[in-house]
Length: 251
Image (cartoon, rainbow, N blue to C red; front, side, top):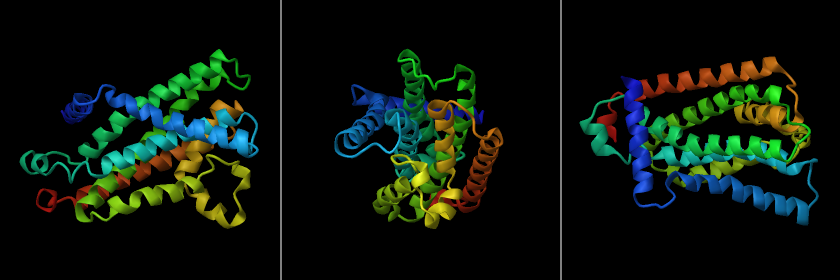
């Protein structure tokens, strides 16, 4: 029953996005591709690329990151922009931001599949078909991290609209803490403690294990990261339910 409700909310979002747009949910495909083109130009025409096969290295990190950024911005006002729906239709209100995450996951997964197909077509020697099923682990971890952030942001926005003005800056700082555009070995010792507990750093490294390195450095680390992301998501749901008791009045 609740999954049906989530499906209904997802359908509603898809209809709203395509109502006045020719391309609808296709637009989010452009963001990671534009960023890829920009950084490839900078690090091939202006600076020296920090690693070999920089395009593969970069896109393996940009894909999950742009999904996180797009879903975060989209989910931020998913509750506060639906006051009438919240007041008139009692429901698990965290489904509102989760529906946005599901919608944004569609172009993310489509690009990931297209990326794998591209690597296969060009004959990338590091692509190991036997490892491709392992992509399910970082994909699941990504969905859990993004869902956690979406639920918390949507809740916080109900109580404070200030977050709308600082979210972009916060995500920009976080972006440069995650080794996406630079080599992970360039992280200085002063930041090691911070990045060590960053789930997105772990997730990005897992995509690169499969798509860039062609080997799984630590299967146990993949499972541990997935468990930690699941724990974060469950904790966000518990916090949401405790703070959203009077959400219909607060929105």
